[in-house]
Length: 560
Image (cartoon, rainbow, N blue to C red):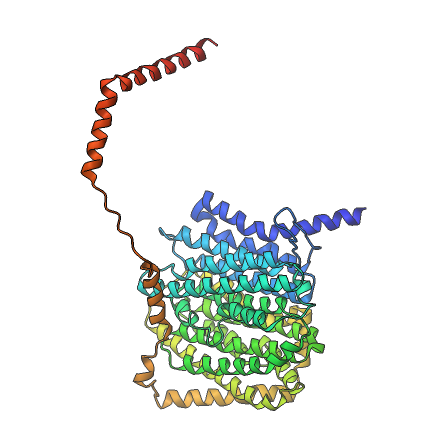
C-alpha cells in the first residue's frame, strides 16, 4: 500500500516540471524585475526529474489519454540536457536582456517557450507533444522580434509563417497517424504499427520546418542574428532538436517503408551538412555563421535517423546515439551562442570559448569526440560503410566553419565597447562551456561511449581532418583571403516569397463589396422617431418611472 501511495506522489511530481515555469510567470507579474535573477529555478524540477525520474502520470482530467513521464534513457537524457541548457541560458539572459518596456514581454515569451519545450519532452501522448510543440514554436516568435526594428520584424515574420505552416502540416500528419493506428493517441502505439508514405512525408516536412535542415532552413540564418543571444542558444540547442525527438517518437521502429527511405534521407543529411558549411563560410555575421553550423549539424541527425531506419535491429543503440548527439550539440551550440554577448573576451574566456567550438568539430576527450567517433563506428558497420570517407571531409568543413565564426567573433569583439555583469553571465556560460567535458564524465551512458572511443585509431581519424582545417584557416588568414563580392550579397530567395505572402494576407484576392449608406436619410429617420416619442411624453415618463424604481430600491434596502 505504501509503495502505491509513494508511486502516486512521485508521479505527481511531473506536474512540478510544468508548474515551475508557469509559477515563474505569476511571480514575474507580481514581483517584476527583482524576480528575473531567480527565474532559472524554474528549470530545477525538470533537471531533478531527469536524474530521479518519477513514475508515469496520467492526468486524464486535462485531455483524453494524457500521459507524462520519462520511461527510457532517451527521454531522461533529453529532459536533462534541455533543463540544463534552459537553466544556464535563463541565468545568462538576466545579465543580457535589459529591463525596459519590452523586458516583461521577453520574459513572458521565454517562460511560455520553456514550458512548451518541457511538455513535449515529457509527453507520451500525441496531444501533449503537439501542444508543447505548438506553445514552444509560437512563443519563440516573441524572442526573435524582441529587439524590434526592420531586421527582427522580417526575421520574425518569416519564422512565424514557416512555424504556422509546419504546425498545420504536423496537425494533419498526427490526425492521419492516429487514424491509421485505430485512434490511439499513445506515441508508444505509433512506434509499433507501420506508416504510409503520405503520412511519413507530412511528418518529415512538418518537423523539418522546425529542425532546419536543407531546404527547410531558411528561417535559421535570419532569426539567430535578430534574436538576443540567450534566445539563439535555446532556439538552436533545444527547440530545433525537438523536431528530431518528434520524428523518432511518431514513427515505427521497424518498417519496410522507412528502410526504403533511409538512403534518400541519408543523402539529404549529407547535403545539408556540406551546404551549411559552404553558406556559413561566406557570411559576415558571427551568429549567422553559427546558425549555418546548426543547419550542418542537423544533417548529422538525419544520418542517425537514416541508420536507424535501415537497421531497425539496432534501434536501441541508435536511440542512445541520438540522445547523446542531441545533448552534445545542444550544450555546445548553446554555449557558443550565449558567448557572443560576452564583451570583452579576455584570454581565459577565449580558452573557455574554444572548448564548445572544438567539441562540435569532434575533439577527442570531449562530448563531440565521443558521439562523432561512435557515429563513424556505426557508419562503418552499416550498409553505408562506403561513405565513411565523406565524414572526414565533413569534419574538416565543420572545423573551417567554426574557425570562421571565431574569427568573426574576434573582429566583432574588437569593435564593441559593450560590457555585461559577469556574475549573471560569465558563471552560467562557463558552466555550459565546461559541460562538454563534464557531462560525458558524469552521465553514465555517455561515459561508456566516451571510454569506447578512447583509442589511437579513433583519435587519429578525428584529429587529422581538424588539423588540416586549422592549417588551411591559418594560411587563409596569412594570405588575407576575403569572400568575393558577389557571394557577400547572397540572400535567401525566401524573402520575396515572404513579402508576397504578407501582401496577399493584407489584401486577399476576394471579391470586394461596397456598401454605401445615405447618412442624411438615416439622420432624418432618427429625428422623426425622436419627435414621435417626445410628443407623446414617453421618454419623460420612462425617466420618471426609472427614478421611482431606484428610489423604491433605496428605501427597501434601508428599512428591510
